[in-house]
Figure 1 (tube, rainbow, N blue to C red):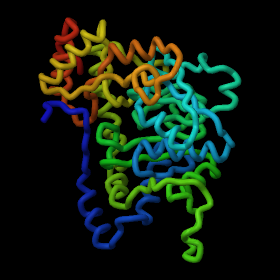
Figure 2: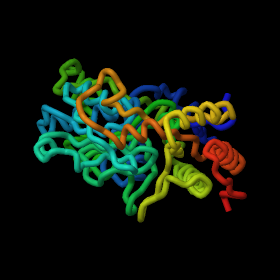
Figure 3: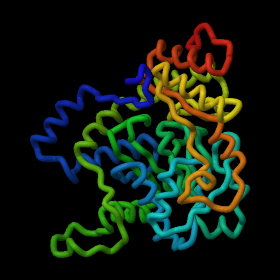
Figure 4: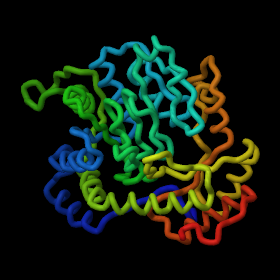
Length: 358
């Protein structure tokens, strides 16, 4: 057990009677509870439509499939070289080619690397790493690590034609597993609902086993929705506490500053070291101190055998080899925050602040 973990599990009190009612009513599969959860997500982020799915990976896969079908994209998807492996995997699931591009120093995809022809004939699939939003006009915005973040008052996940979220335990809200897609496009929304359910477009028993579209089994469940509905009753509180801890860690550790009109709700707090060996040594010591942490994601086209490709990705490679991230979530109290700052500062040889939360 870690003294401070990366996960933040919250179970509001109202979950227990609501869960019992759902179980007694036999509402465990596809029921109106899913629609209630979807409505709560859509209202919170300001989208017209929300499609709940089984996890963040399937959110990406379903979104790519919908884009491919609607916009007749049949060749490639532009993906940042620095991201979680689920994102390029979701492209391969759909029979498309992954085109990796480097990132900027702030970890967001650098669209200047995209050839105009590629840009015109590809899906641009950005990523909001650690809660920081990327370009403001992607086709799909993977906001799995940024639920609750805002830029200019607009929610992460709503800058592209579609946005995706994950409800894994290390994210802002967690239903154990789970994910969602948001969009303002009714055609994309309808298609995502179909793709989520094997490509089915009807509930008519006479046509139950006819499938209009290519699809997956990416369905969310009613029991997850019960927890999700209850969590959304408290989402403002979770976001506020997570941001409070982020700002305290920003004051104590530096290195992760917000842009103008940006409000980051972090997945974790990133820390840079002078070299890969310094990072790895520090990580071992941080883990030994009881703080769960992770290396930053790999530079996929240079480090993951399935995706190795020709090209140079110097910024992504540097970040991958010199950064790690530590916990920064709503369940950390002030003592937890001070402890993480103290341990990380010891590893970086920094002067510690007396009270980062003042």
